[in-house]
Length: 548
Ligand SMILES: CC(=O)N[C@H]1[C@@H](OP(=O)(O)O)O[C@H](CO)[C@@H](O)[C@@H]1O
Ligand SMILES: [Mg+2]
Image 1 (spheres, rainbow, N blue to C red):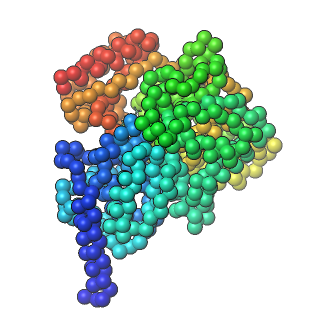
Image 2 (image 1 turned 45 degrees about the horizontal axis):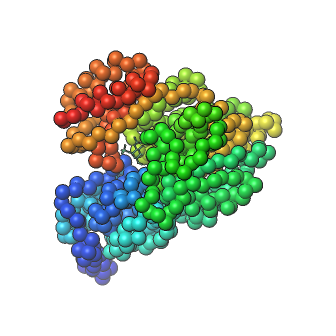
Image 3 (image 1 turned 90 degrees about the vertical axis):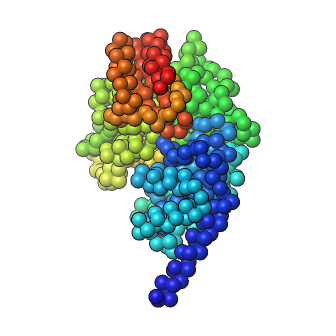
């Protein structure tokens, strides 16, 4: 055996023994919980997460080693979940969600039953994927404002140290900020660096792009933003500071991050979307624009009240439609040809939005499974892919070839040039890595300013079909298996046929059932021609689940 080989073996043995040693301080709390890397990583009550986060640190190190030392992100957040929950998810080098094939390793690590089993799994994954355990690896991590965050960060650091990783702590930030930073780090040495890998760099990039795209347009009217008492509040305040009051003025409500038990309570994007009403703390002024962020500021929904104080929600479907319409118009004016704009939605998209996109805007629409990772990948197949979940999580992806085509386009008139410039600035306003509430806020304000629209004009594109989303607790949510982008159940057997029978009775009726990936429950969605019918259909489908 060569000396090098011997040293390498020693180092690997040391690493494995460190992993076992630290694992004994971060033991799995109980064996009843079956951990699963779901729609948005691991997410559950924070007191169950210590061992999971430690183990995610190990996996992050392997992932970075597998990708030649590119930086991997780890975000500690539970987004819209209640204050006592927390979660953890991995970010791939280009700021994307963790590659799906690695989720099984995350799940395996989390469920290892002993320190030895964990070290063995770690070694096995390295062997299977031909990962050199002495190769360098780099991790960037951050957390939201939850009280449980700092303790989980320590567990993560132990995991990273045990695996011999180099790591940087980015402190408290929004999920999209960390996605942005990860992409910036990994593109720093390339011909197209994404930006400065810091929060300051993030604000600078967004602010400069917003100012460019708004040039010559009137400053947006006052907007009130509910920050869910989460990390989005202070971060939005920082962004506003960089933008300056001459560019944008906003009132932030529900921005008390010190009172951590107030997070997402009676406020935030999820509350407004599911309850279809104003959050606490928002004083409704007729026809003014309001918005709500979620707990980690990767989602946003808008809303307003009319003169009669009636509430109107402008959700992810409305944002996608607004963005697709604007981009299509700009492309048409610019004269740039052969750029395909497509929209990606999930089964939760309102049927009216899909009809508007396909029949009025005539853009292709793809339907994918729930979870941004699915939408993101489908959107990458278009030249400009607009993707939004109905709950307000989404973004717009411009392919590299499209950006190149726009940059090199020779405009025949100032009008054409202006449309091209607007499209290019828009691509910078929009966070290209992941759905981002702050960046989406600027996107919406841009379109409204260019169209001289208020919220009610925006809302006129189409009328939502009344809909209802119900959460049903069942004995075993894993018994619910779906096909056709989650729109149909395969198991439990016979259930889909019963749903179909019910749906047939309702005008514009549509309903589907799927297991949640973030909560221990199944979700029932129903829409129909009237509010009463949508509620009734949701109730009847929910009743089918009783006794299962
Ligand atoms: C109906 C719904 O809103 N589902 C949400 C929710 O997923 P579930 O798998 O439905 O629990 O949380 C996800 C992560 O935030 C989000 O991507 C998704 O849209
Ligand atoms: Mg979120």
